[in-house]
Image (cartoon, helix red, strand yellow):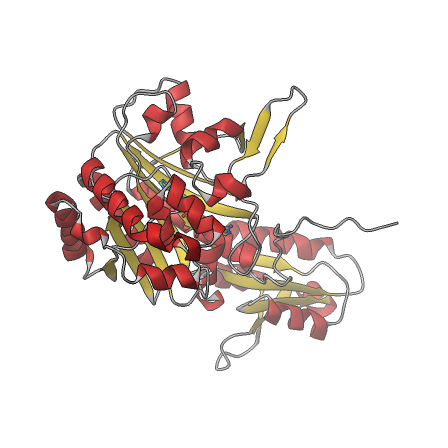
Length: 420
Ligand code: HAM
C-alpha cells in the first residue's frame, strides 16, 4: 500500500531526525521563556487554533502576504469560512472584544503553533511555533520600554550573540500619511519596473514596498524619501530614548526602513535579527497596533505586542548550552530484572533535576554506551548480574576523562545521585 507522507513544510519533530535536538531545544526554550514572561507579571491566554477566516482578513490585512496567499482556510460542514491561525494577536483581541473583558489593562502571553502557506525553506515552515506577548490598554510610552525590556531579557538570558534589535516608528497619523504620499509620488514613475507584488503593495499599503525582496525595487528605493524626514519629534525622541536606555544591554539600531509584514501596525515597530540565521534572520518581531481593537468591533484599545518564532530561536541555541544533566541507566543481564527498574525508580525520586534515561532495548554494553554518549549523558549507571547479586552499581563518567569509573553500594549510588 502507498505510504502517507506528511504535508510540505510541516515538520515531524524528534530528536534523532534531520532536526536533531529541536524538540529538546523547544522544550527548554519554552520553559525558560514562560519563566521570563511570569517575571513580568504577564498572564497566559489560550485561544483556539481555528477562527472565523474573516478575523484575519480584517486584522492582518488585505495588503499582507499572509492574507493574500498564505492563509490556511476551508469551509466547515456548515459552509462557514474557517482559518487556521497564522498568528496570535488577532485572536487575543477577538477574545477581549467578544468576552467584553475589562479593557483597561491586560498583560498577556501565549504560546502555540501557527500556520502559514509559505514556500518552505530553512527557518520558514508551514507550521511553526510562536511565543507572544500583548500589552493592552496603555498608549505609547511605557509599554514600549517594557516590551524592549522583555526582548533584552530574552536575548541576555540565552546569551545570544550577534543579535540586533531593529526599531522604527511608523509615525503618527499625519506623518504616516505625508510619508506614504511622498513614497507614492516617488514610486509612480517607476511603476513599470516594479513586479506585480510590489505594484499591489503600492496600491494597498505603500509602506510595505519598503519590505520588498526584489533587487530591482531595492535599487529604486535607494533614492526614495526616508521615513526619518517625516517623523514627528515625539516619535524620534521615543526611538532615541529606547536606544539610549537599552544599548548597554543589547545591540539596538534605529532602522528607518523597517516596516512589518502585517497591516495592523501603527506606531513603534521592532524586530530582532541574528546574523547566525541566514536568509530568515528575524527571530522575533512586533509593534504597536492601536486601531486593531476598534477594527474588530471593540473600543479604542491602545496595544503593543510581539512574537518570537521558536524554531528560528532554537537555531540560535547551542546543544551544549542545554543545561539538563542526563544519566544513562544501563541494565546488562539477559533477563528482565525488576529490581533494577526499582532502583531506577528510586533514583528518579531522589533528584528531579536529573534526566535518567533507562535503556530498555536489548543489546551489548558497548552498544548501550554508544547510545549513552549520543544522548549527551554525563554518566552511565551500569547494573549487571554481578552487581545485582552484590547490591551494587557501576558509575561510569562519560564526559570527564579525569574522573574514574567506580563500583558503589546502592546507598552510595543514592547519595551520588542526590549530589549531581
Ligand atoms: P511576525 O513577524 O509575522 O509577527 O512573526 C513573528 C515571528 O514568527 C517572526 O519573527 C519569525 O521568527 C516567526 N515566523 C513567522 N513566520 C514563520 C514561518 N513561516 N516559519 C517559521 N517561523 C516564522 C507576528 O506574528 C505578530 N503577531 C507579532 C505581534 C504580536 N505583533 C504584535 N503583537
